[in-house]
Image 1 (cartoon, rainbow, N blue to C red):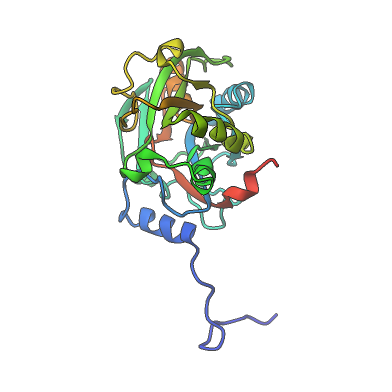
Image 2: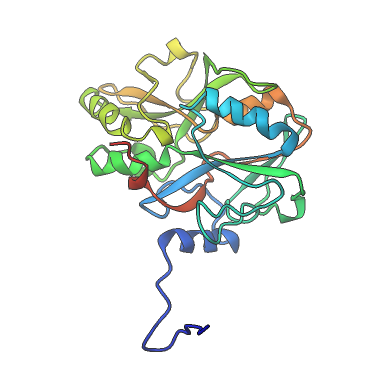
Length: 272
């Protein structure tokens, strides 16, 4: 069998934006939020659990597809996710992780290779960063991106459907928009059910248990102008709220806003 070698006449294919971003993350050159990185590529929320809890967590996701849309589930003990990218390693390709013990975050490393165990199962869930590209393409500005901030995220009083030890409130992300833009945003994001789909609430934050928009539970606050409405989407940080309730002895997640960048393209996730 012959082997194809790169020569000056047959150069290696150029590195994709996703691969280039992961290389920077893997080397420790990028440890911040990933909003706006690798335009066009799907980003994912990460939850890593012992195999004994993986079945319950999968059922939790299936019962709550708006905040927890499953993009991929790894093989027990394997840090690789070949359906999301040929070189993805979940131990090194997230800018910043959260290590949880008994429901408490005890560490936020940039690499978890030393913590990997043979019974761990990786879950990657859809992220709103994917539909943000479609919103921008539709001419809808996003203030947190314009200001270089992480999106604002809030715990709500909307209960998720429990499964095993997992349950708790839905977490939402918020983007301020003028009323006409909010209507257009519903139309645009409805096309992307695998990355949270249409908003779950528009308007008065108190109706979903949010007391103060200037104090997000995760991410960075952005101002809502007098002629704007806060628009709320289900958020993939919801599993972290579920972990606070379940209190597993050990698990790992991404740090909010610090996503796994995949080789999948956002337009591949459009339902119509």
